[in-house]
Image (cartoon, rainbow, N blue to C red; front, side, top):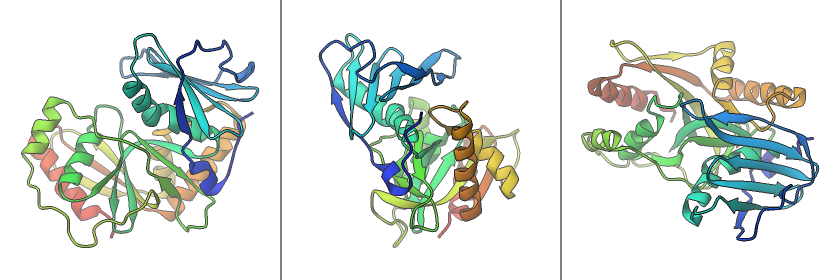
Length: 287
């Protein structure tokens, strides 16, 4: 059974202990009671596997490490694959394993990058390869602080009117083409009062980024039903087939669409359209 906390307690990032001893067959968590989910990469190959055990939960990042979090503990253990160094193991933990383990404890995990505005966190959701990391880097160049890359973790049921998001250790990963594109953008810097600070901030908005045919960059406010369907396409959770998980997903994401604006921004694939996208996002940012 999934171990669920509520409110800010679900946003506590477990520490990480990288182990050098051989991994026990059950990772010290007892027998598997729910095989969880296999998550594919962009090529359809297995990238991650999750499992619920009698006394906790585990995540395997294929070819990198196996991570285990015991119920009631605030430190996860990691057993690297042979030859894997601590740096990539820690990075993999913060990018995917920890967000998934936090959903096991009651948080939600949105596949998104994010920046910080004057009113909180704005998530940028998109399918892999659309350019959400590149978009976040462009907004960072305009003075918005980076909040997340690939994983926005949040919880509802808090004292805040809006869901709260927690900052996880992260750094943008850009390929050479994206880096060259960002270098062509102007860098006006930080406007006064543009960002708030802290590691626990309200979720202030969500923008769904979608590539379209060549044409104008467009922005649309979404109805609750359309926004909910769009968000759920980017939601990751530990045991998505469990009815209890499905109910919690629906309840938490209904809370999101009821409390924060959700927009869809569609843009073309070429460089000039990307610049138009950034201009559109700058105008759409909540303040």
